[in-house]
Length: 191
Image (cartoon, rainbow, N blue to C red; front, side):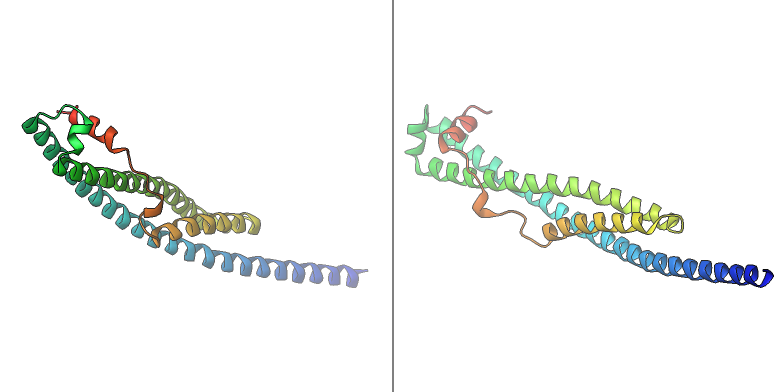
């Protein structure tokens, strides 16, 4: 009886040791994967910040051009006494500037949309980063399932924003331009 009890104890201890070492191996693999994702998030954060900065600079440049052309349109309006859209588009300079404002404001809207997209994305990625840092500290107490689930969520967010940072700022085919007449009245009524 003592032999069986001793044998049972040895088998139990060995089994627990094997389970513990398997759990530790799984956690080490998950830990490495989590650390790898943290590095990927940091790289993505940097890239998102760069693109956002470039987009904000482009926004400023585009807005400056819109302001310049609008000022020229208002000057022509005053100098020529233009009262309505029909009269305005008969003046080549005004029509040309209106078309430029139309195109640039469409680009400006697309760039602004992307700036917002990257700002919202940065918040989401920052949250994941902080959560990954916290989970890294607690990896010993997390279950394998929780780590796997979190890494899957991280992979989805990383894929979404990595695709965005590696693509064009906007799709020129999807840009919608305002009507020239609406632009004329908007510019001609502003001071």
